[in-house]
Every structure is written in C-alpha cells, then in structure tokens.
Image (cartoon, rainbow, N blue to C red; front, side, top):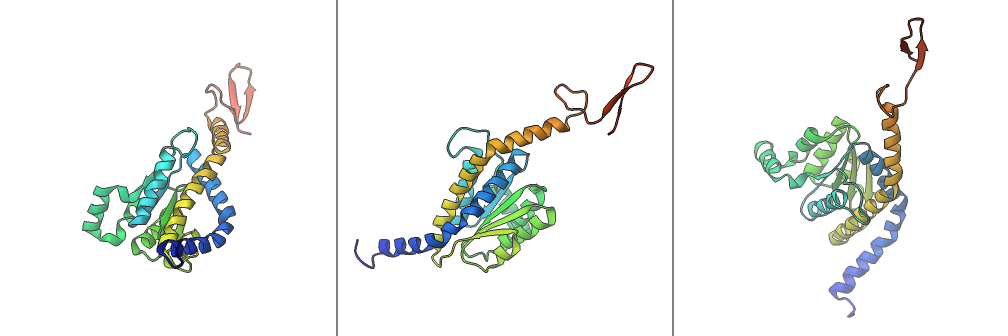
Length: 229
C-alpha cells in the first residue's frame, strides 16, 4: 500500500477514530437496553437525517422492522425522511427547517425515542426536531461528529464520533446502528417478558388469566364484592 495513498489516509483516519469510539461501549449497551424496553411496551423509534445520514437512519429502521440476526417480532421504527409526500408538503408550506419537527409533533408520544443523525451536528431541521421532541415528551438522542455542536446541546443524550473526517463519522454511525441493534436484540427477550408480566397485572379483574387487585368479601347475600386494598 503506497504511503500517502487515498486508502492509507482513509484507514489512518478511521483507525484514529476507533480508539475513542471504544469508550462508547457502555453507552451503546444502555441505549440498546433502553430501546428494547420501550419498543417492547408499545413505544417506537423515530429517526431522521440528511443526505448520507438519512440513508443510515433508514438502514437502522430496516434492521428493526426486519431483523439483524435471529427471527423475532417486528419492532416499530420510522424513518421520517422516507415520508416523501409529507416531507415535501411541509417543506413547501412551512420551510425545510420544519420538515422533521412537524412530523415529530404529529407522531411522537411519551415513551418514544427520536434518534437524529448528523456528521456536523449543525443541521437546523434536526435541531428543531429535537426541540419538538422535548415539547411532546419524546426522548431525543443524537449521533454526531465531534462535540460541542448545536444538535448535541438540543438532545437528551449524544454519542459523538471524535473525527474531523465526515466519511469516518458516517462509517462509525453505521457501526453504531448495527451495535445498537445487537444490544437491543440481546435485551429484547427480558424486555418482552417484563412487558407480558406487566400486562397480566393490568388486566381487568374477572378476565381469564387476570390477577385481582383487591380483596373479595362475601356478604350475607352471597354476592362477592371487591374492596380496594
């Protein structure tokens, strides 16, 4: 490999970014476990980005709605940029800076996660989407390049790739997507079991398989009445 070649330069930049990226392991595991429990209980993942980051965001939703490794139930994940009619209508009527914020306002619910991908962390439409998420009670995560940047400041949590090379940042964002899915799928069986247990407890008393939340008292008339405990 000739010294100073394009390949050598690219791989050198990638190798340099891998050293600090290794410190993200605990955060990736935490994000994956958190997302597994949210999706198992009816939450959803909303994702967005621009350009190459949009393609990476859609790659992530494909892995969740489909699968990464073993077969499992589909998980709710929506790439907001893929809603082309809504996106172009919003851009035409409100401006491009609002194409994601308005969709977050429409679709976001407490318990959902909004994941925003940006190499620069300076895209106004993503910053506004993070602000909209805060307004509707949606947790916001950012995948960016080096911090500080406006998107990292606007989100609840950020995973920042330490590199000044845009291509390297995007490549490690793809690694992040795959690892996020792996940690999620590792935690998913426990998350689904916990969700099922919680659903049984919440069932209405008297339904088959339900757990009664109270004390049955039999009066002289023979009719059982439930008294809240």
